[in-house]
Image (cartoon, rainbow, N blue to C red; front, side):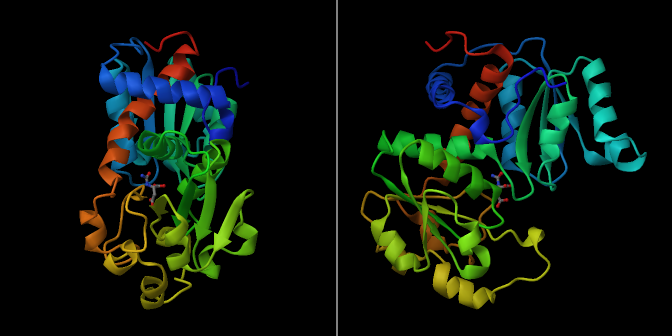
Length: 305
Ligand code: NCD
């Protein structure tokens, strides 16, 4: 029985809770909060490679004083000895583990875990489905830049269909009142991939002219067998480069969840662009995860100073 709160996608959080997470993120950035997770045992379980999200969750847990166990899939009986997810969850519950952070290639895997685990499950990315903490740190970075997102236009560019980041971020943008443009070729963004409240734009140049911020996506090659569009054609139509940067408003910013592929969705001029916010996103990610962990484990007590 699921008795504790988990974060599987952004719609597990109310609007007030998202605001509380943002306020706390800001407070934590200004002052280290101390050992809010003292005595809490956390397990990180990453079935896919990760540099940013894995390190960021580890730092967030350690900075809050949690005990951290990093399990790699090869250490799990689940992978090699035929143990079910449900029985693995029962085992970790019995040891008193309070938090599991899970990344898995299968959409829905974290939700299955949450249903069987007597603790908090945080989805750190499941297949093409969702990546709520990445969405929160993206939204926080946008708010940090613009204040309110009401009336702002945000373009999400690239492999929208396979991007869990895009799916979660779009949910959040709608809730914060932004106008969302989804930009990409038919093969990565069909009209069926259209997400409520977002507008499909095929022409990147015209999207750039309308946008206050651009979120670039990596092509998720690990999620399909054959690249459905020629690399050269993709670059020609959808790469952000020096020529295209000139179409943006002077105050516009460019973001990317990472890892970015130079020569595909962007070229090196983007990395020199004054509005390139990648490092800010990564920086915010640690504090966002601290705030999420605190909210799930300790609840919404009045803790924002
Ligand atoms: C993303 C992911 O793994 O979903 N990266 C991240 O967590 N920062 C995006 C990607 O892999 O392209």
